[in-house]
Every structure is written in C-alpha cells, then in structure tokens.
Amino acid sequence: MFKTICALLKKYDKWVILSHTRPDADALCSVLAVASLLKEKNKQFRIILGSAIPVRYRFLIDDYRDLLLPEYLEVQPGQTLKDTLGDAFAAAPAIILDCSDAERVGHFSQELFDIKIRINIDHHKGNSSFGTINAVNPNAAATGELVYDLFSACNATITPSVADLLMLAIAGDSGWFSYENTSEKSHLIAVDLMKKGARLSYVRKHLEQFTLPVIHLLTRALNNVELDPRYGIALSILRIKDFTETKTTPNDTEGIIEMIRAIEGVIAAVFIREHVEGKFQISFRSNDGFDVSRIANQFDGGGHRGAAACRCSGDVDTVKTNILNALQEALPILKGE
Image (cartoon, rainbow, N blue to C red; front, side, top):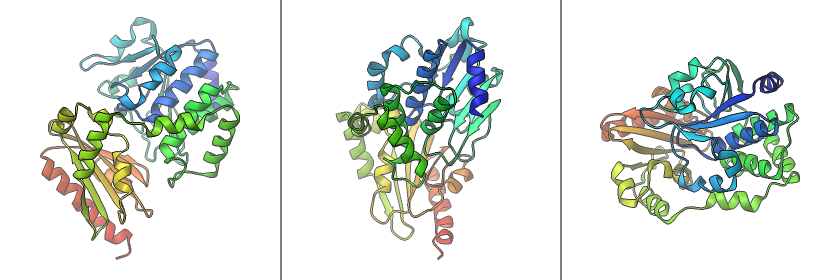
C-alpha cells in the first residue's frame, strides 16, 4: 500500500494535507512529518485544518515555521475548501491523516469527495475507508507509526526534527507507550527515532505543559466529576460558560479525559464538552479492557476499544442520561455480573 502511495507522491507535484478539527499531537505531528517528506521530494503543498491549532501545540508554529508558513491555512466557518486553497491547488490530490471518517476534517467534509485522489492514512478502528486509497491499520498505536512506515517505503530521510515529530505523535496517542494500543513495534519505532535524534526531554515537555488558563479549566473539569462506584463510571461536563469564564476554548480540553480515567476504580471515563450551545462532543476512555467504542457506536461515533468519541445534540441532562444508561447497560455484561 505505501509503495503505491510513494509512486503517487512521485507523480504529482502539488498536494493538500489535512487532518481533523481540534487536532491533537498525533494529528498535528503526522501532518508536519508528511509536509517534511513532501518538501524533501521538492513538492508543493498546503496544510489545511478546519479549526485553530490548540494553545498547547502553538510551539509547533515556531519550531516548524519553515513547514507551516505560508503553507498552513484554516478553513473559516462559511468558507469552502476550494476558496481556501485557490485555483493553484483546487485539483491537487489530498493526504488525510488521523481521520476515522471524512466528517472529522470539519464543515467542508463533503468537498473531499470532489478530490479525485484521496489518501486516507489512519489507525482508528471502524475507519469508513473514505479515501480512494486507504492505508488504515487499527493495530497501530498512532497515525505517526503509519507515517513512519511511509517514510521507510519512500526512502525519505527522518531528520532529528522529524524524529521529534513522530515521537510526539506516538507518545501522545499511546500515553507514553502505556495504553493497550501500544505494541512491540511501537517501542521498536521509538528506539529507531531516538537513534535518529528524537529528544525525549523535548517530547515530554510539550506533552505535559499547560498554560495557567488551561489549568483553571482543568480544575473546573475535575471539580465537576461525578463518580458512580456501582459501575465504575466517572463523568465530567464543561459548558460554554466554563470556557468563557476561564478565557479558554473547547480546543483546550485535551488531557482532561485521561485524568478522569486515572481515578481509582474507574472502568469507563466520560467527558462531555459543549462546543456550541446544545451541541456536545463526548469522549470516552476505559480501563480493564472495557470496549468504549461499542458505546460510541450507539451514538454514531467510533474509535478504539480503550478510547472513543461521539457527538450529541439536545438538552445536556438528556445527553448525560442517555450516555449513562448505555454504559450501565453494557458494563454489567462486560464485567461478568
């Protein structure tokens, strides 16, 4: 599969690189690594995101300015992908990274299907195979692992700065190589990236660093946690007013769900985030092998066994009740009760 992708990279001179809204370390670092590969091959490219880079990852703008500027573009609300790209890149093939379905790129998702060559590189279980070429491996700990394979297949150079990016991607999505999705291959890739110059101090600093407003937001989220010890469910909700009052945005919530999962006795962690009035993004995490993707699927979402997500609309109490009911129905069966 990657050899086919490499042949296409060689054939076409202009490319569009996309990932999902509210991008995390795996998404952003995979995008930048692919941009580096294209730059090495003397290709032109544009990086497209449907939302702003979260504050905690703004360091990438400075550290990888040569890749991001002027190639990085945000599709603004009400704007089309075609208008954002302009005529020069309107017909360019696309590489879509870390997206389980086309809708993850944002409000312009339907325009993806106007692109004749769509390379879908992803590691999420239940990927919808929306690409014309789909390099999907749910056994990979991160999309960064698949980008590493792409570099190998294309005989591209993993420089020390690219090694940092791929280490950030994999460490971020595997919980520092501790989640169930971590494999022997994950560790072997990490060893090779260290040999190529990846700096663990750099990676650790940026995965664990928060601004003071985000700390205030985290405090609210943790104070809001509700625990049901009967089922091992912990749940927290943040509303729009929480972001307004702490001077943060819904993009600043990465890491909250992991803290909820870390509570003693928790089997299923739930974080409900209101991003528009009456519209909610729900994140799930689990311990002890409980498959939260089964719960997310009930609400037209998806993900992995240990990490999944979905979107819901309506009254917050109804959304909360529906989520809890689905978990309470599933947990006794999976716990053997």
